[in-house]
Length: 54
Image (cartoon, rainbow, N blue to C red; front, side):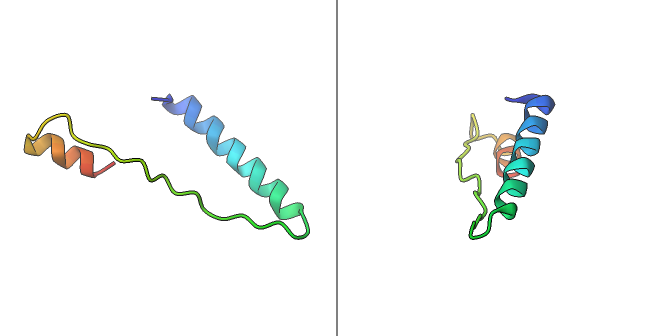
């Protein structure tokens, strides 16, 4: 886990890159969705429900 500081740094970096890209004449930028899969550690309902909220 990155923690709050790591997440903050990634958001700042993303904002800087988007700003730089928008300043370029012919540049295009699009979304990069997180498609990582996550699985529950067990089949207990509570854990499966928590995993589905990620």
